[in-house]
Length: 558
Image 1 (cartoon, rainbow, N blue to C red):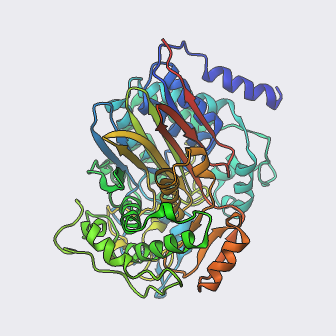
Image 2 (cartoon, rainbow, N blue to C red; image 1 turned 135 degrees about the vertical axis):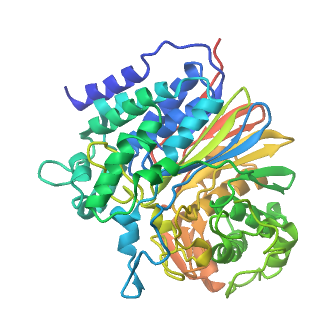
Image 3 (tube, one colour; image 1 turned 135 degrees about the horizontal axis):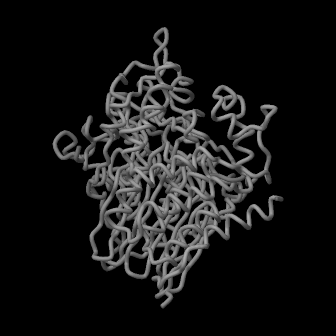
């Protein structure tokens, strides 16, 4: 059977279930197959949570270099009854992890935190999806698992971007036979765009979870297989590490911005905190009087980014292990930071700031983003990841599950940058059971207590700044969601002291920024943002134009 008919078969299987009356809604993901799976869940009587779970599990099949059940996720949601919530499915360090586990001869070896057994944290995405489905969805979790399993079993056509990731990581993939079996051909070469990728082992794993529940994964055969592989390959993860894993559901980070309420993810996400912090700094400026295509716009926001990321490097970590000051989102503190900004020239931010009550008022103990909403009032923003492309490059034999390398999101040693160049201090050092700091920034915006926007992004630390820019372009400049996501991306993370910026910002802007003293790293494309919105009585949905994703608005059916 040729590839066209195989792809057609996948679509027919996906839509083979009888359809029921469904609410309207909107979905945006990075992959058309995942978006179709989410829409099918809505059409089959599910709500936004069913759509999100279906999308997440399907992305683990068709976008597995970015996310999957071998990784973790953050969820921000607003329920139809008005309740807001978060769910923390972030990975955890194994019990035998310790602060100096990546030091060799006194120096941090980041290869150990990025590839292989020691790079892997205990995954949380599966448990988070199961809890979302059980507590807030309308359809059985097993239905979503089975639909995704069919896609994994029957295969899908490898997109160009997926094939490119395999080529870039082929040397590391070759080190792990179970990963090579999936991603390379019989000669050990990368599978090419257009070939059909089948994942029978992953399909079986999904079906075992559908049949036996998540205990099969966390307290049964999957945990046992992983522990056995770890023992043979220099790892430290045990069956007990899986059995002890749990999600948390802390209150969202909440701030206001020009009459809107912004809901973000609390630590160990740094996204909610620093999106709020930067918005608080910008609130003192009338952005509508600043041309968003001018160097003034880029300069002001860049200077705000610098100040926030300096604070991130020092203060942020897992609140169960370190004190993360709530004063970081204090509006008075933001005003103090904003007063340091010189509107004419680039500044040098030498160190972090000192938020109020930093020792007493603290937060409680590659990536993909997808947003879903329904006409009943359920909204959900989820950012999921296994970290860098194909995570640790480890596939546990016989399971098809690509395991994360989230241990690299800890500070391997204070002052040593991770794969994204981010610095950390003791607040984000390795410790048993600790969750590493993340930039993931799922965000929901309310107006008059009604949800109007769910947004988030992929791209390492640029997740924070992409989410910020999407908020500014929609809320300050009133752009439709699709247009907002198409605006140029730019990013500053304090260290290194340079702006990453897309070329389409324009030569005049680039020249002006250089004259103000900024160092630039110019890219043709950077990051990926997904969003759904509700403006002027209509749903809007948009995927980032930098990727071949899919965004759909569904009208209610009776």
